Image 1: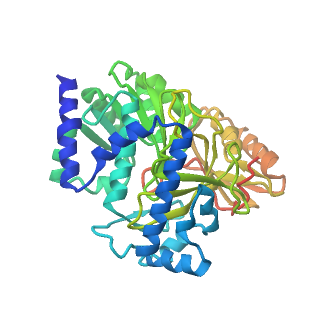
Image 2 (image 1 turned 45 degrees about the vertical axis):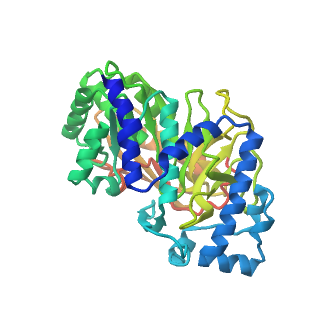
Image 3 (image 1 turned 90 degrees about the vertical axis):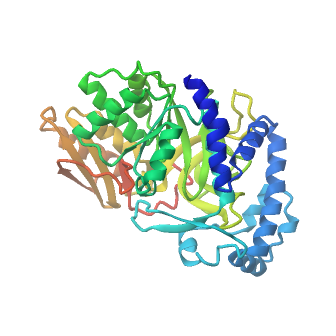
Length: 457
């Protein structure tokens, strides 16, 4: 009976909802399920064709790009390969903030206003049209089906976005009930609330979980501590996104819930960039998104090289994202996935540029170099590392009785070994460490400008 209900939702109720919203999600998802099997060369040519049409439309209707193309002598009709993008400047958050109105297409209708807070707390306000929504939802839906689950299967969502959590009106509650989705607030994680979450998950017996890796791992650890089994519920997959997925988080979630973990990469601004398939490949949504890996001087890097991820989203004619700097660091794979899909792969998503730290001598390294010093010390329950400047790094620690008197000096010595002996290391013992406003948790934040993250140690 459960599978019959899922088929009704995925083939009738959800398509009806999308039609009422004037979204083309169903048709796009079906086309994506065909195009994912195309050879890589055919997908690349499809990208070129779409890019040409996209840039011509943008030139005609978007004031910011019409002026930019005229000023730089860029003619989109001459686009014959993806490398043509390198002739255009990057789209940065600052450009979006200062040119918001000029980035709106003059023929755009029903634009939805969105914002992201970011680690700095300064909001980025941008707009999304129905075309973009349809394509993003279709890409996520396709990836969901890779794992033999579908819209309409029971789902627990652990999320912290004010957009989702602020929209819990009666209509949304009815919709979630019909779709068999339950939302748990990721920024409300006291011990009592975690007990409630575990009870909710056990009662619902979801086929899939969706949320921040830190939140799902936190729930999993709490269930283990309470001695409550969660691996007998029939969970097939846990989709995680919006944060770096650490190996220990994947292991914790898989062990506690008895399911696979599927990583996803993207955001409200850049779109759903890549999703992991059961064979392990992080497939780029290449039908919609062109990914460039950029070095420290703005040059395009070859597959296998680490640099900043820059994206062009081809379904954003209403408010274009062209060569948008994500602030994330990653590597595009030289090979394709063993699953047989022709979609290119992200080999690594190494984190945000602010997840990297800079030693006093200028060496850039991933923050994991510091995380490993703290993480496995006895008595450390929670921690957060903030690189305030080249000369000062702070560590906030939540500890219990197992924390040893000499452990603080162990941390200081380990940090100085990596950052430099002259760097000041300050440790502050706290009762709790707050999450970001969105509900995410960040283990490490660097306030040092890391323009050299194209070459990561």
